Image (cartoon, rainbow, N blue to C red; front, side, top):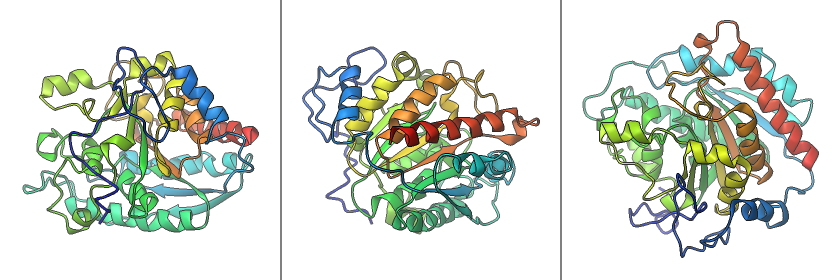
Length: 356
């Protein structure tokens, strides 16, 4: 179990300020790992990242450890579960090798899924979720022990729980959560029952997981004060559905605010996280026009260049590892968007490698 002295999920925990503008959670008087003061600007955060304790001039770049997780929390083997194989087939590993050393760790083997929603947990395939978290944790841990940078390709977002379990080492860990949704429904509130609606609620210990012996021993994995949400734009959906937003507990910059200053907001978020921290990237933070091959489109979102600014800043800040999720090849029959994602990830590694 995570040490309770290191991780607290008390609702009274308050987020660090990400800046003083509409759409960004602002809380004064806190002085966390990044030494953010209430009046810090986004540009100051970026300057501190480039010149401070997480310098982008660190010598060398870790070998990238690629790991596929073919998960689909709808209880299926198609859709987003095919993401890792399609991105590999479109040259992901090869393009990464142009810019860095790469070790391909293959794909996590998952049990056959069930689409049935469990009456007790209100989650689709709860046993499968427990197995997913344990197997991802056990696959990511040796990548970290080898000194490699895990790049975990989904699949969908619940794989984050296994990544956090591996990265935390049973102690404090931070989370940069770049996602078009907050993903913090309680299971009973979810209209789908998919764990992809609720992985952050589970990670924070907000959602009860006593129905799973595996999850009950792991959760919570991260404290509200150690999470930065960037790009969520589902506030109106949550309001209509009567679901509480996390913005009163977690530092959050919504999609519109993030688009206005992607590098600055990302820098401020990264410098304020504890070390180590994990970088979660759900590609539905992009606009549906930029990436239509996702299951749950919504208005707004980033363009590819804006997301590149966020992700480059995050990777330069030296996360413990990162995951990329939610691409659905079934909605991309010509694989146009698969190739765009591969080029995008390759360009990020190229930028970071050149900076070092």
